[in-house]
Image (tube, rainbow, N blue to C red; front, side):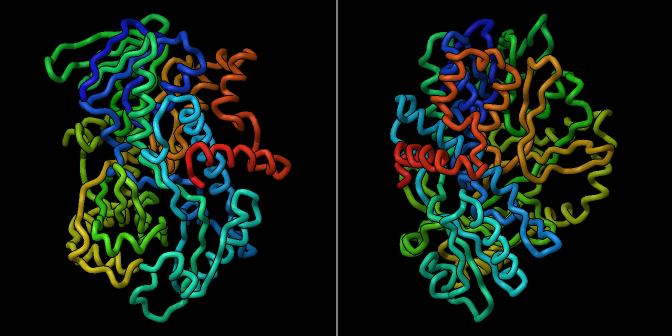
Amino acid sequence: MKHSTHIANPDVIIIGSGVMSANLAAMLKRLEPALSLQVYEVTDELAQESSHGWNNAGTGHAGICELSYTPKREADGSVNVAKAIGIFEQFEQSKQFWSYAVASGMVGHPKEFINPVAHLSFVHGAEQVDFLKARHAGMSAHHFFREMEYSTDRAVIGGWAPLLMEGRAEMPVAATRMDSGTDVNFGAISRKLLAWVEKQPGCGIASGHRVVGLKKSGAGWEAQARDLATGKIVRNTARFVFVGAGGGSLHLLQKSGIAESKGLGGFPIGGQWLVCDNPDVVKKHQAKVYGQALDAAPTMAVPHLDTRVLDGKKTLLFGPFAAWTTKFLHKKGRWTDLPGSIKADNLVTLLKIGASNLPLVRYLIQQGTQSMADRMEVLHIFYPAAKTADWKLIDAGIRVQAIKKTDGEAGIVHYGTEVITNSERTISALLGASPGASVSVNIVLEVVKMCFPHLLATDVGRARMKEMIPTYDVDIKLPQHAAEFRAVQQRANQLLELG
């Protein structure tokens, strides 16, 4: 369904209709009902790019199973789990906000966008088994992960996830498990929140509109959006602009001309999944299982075998497999996106990154030339008895890896989402990848704190935010707040029907 409501000269213009934009729009309107908002989206339907259900893994990233968030072993053999703890805390804020949206009638039934799915880490080989044991020791010592189980018993692991053990040769294996994981349809929650926003006074959504210009205008910004159906250019101004356009954010940042955009580049990586709909196979697996990183693969390409619940149907997904592309968006991208992003101020950075990341380039070439048999060979690492006839290959979304100067040296941001904000705090844009969607509420909360501090400076504003995110001003990582965290988590889980 195309959306065509327009608000002239609103307080806020939001570009993109994915989970970041949806959360920010809903949060701002709840925090200050008098704010006027205009959303522009290039596709006719909302949340069709990175947030779309099939364009991401749907994992509620909470640091439970993702080995890439705990890669570092200390000199004493322990594993640094600080990153996993931080991601867990941030995902809990997402759950709190979404449960508030359920309780306040902003969105419908939670099963339409979030479902409980156990999260497992699975490894094989003596070295990795030892690593997972050390990781479990570090994780389970924190109150966030105290229920995490660890086992090297093949029968136990087979009970957790039968497909992992079917046809597996004798070898050392280990797994950790927590029942409190989730599967999230980020597109569904985005559309639900924006449907509520569009019904509010002073709010408009115009889909089928590509923002082609962004320039300073007085104390704010003028956005120029082209109606793709008519070709007409719509001009609109706002005091604040939020660029949540996924892969399209880099081009818009460059158009803005802000100093903070200088030197930034982007490298697009396409994704593909193997999908199984065979009910006899699907019913055996009820988990998201993350494994060890493949050689030279970026963090987003760590393989996993996942239960997915999309549009009420359960299926299995395996991947991701990377694909070479020059597009920055899956549906509305253009082959000229990558070359068009190369500017004088980021050319040196891009050349450095190309020279220093040859293994990544080789990996992408190798991925792009894989046969179905090659992909099944990777799947057999997880599910040795998998049959080719049960699986099909589908295209997924595109992630644009942010490339920036770091202390004078080029570097790729392999995970994490960066917020780029100008010094006047009148424009913010998002760059980066996983675990962005999962921690989107925390990210937009930081945008609110930075760019709308006056909304949190009053007792009314603070009370409203406290109602939406009860722990927004509490460091629930600290042991003295463990009981408060449990109480808030239990209420959110009940509202979201997570058990």
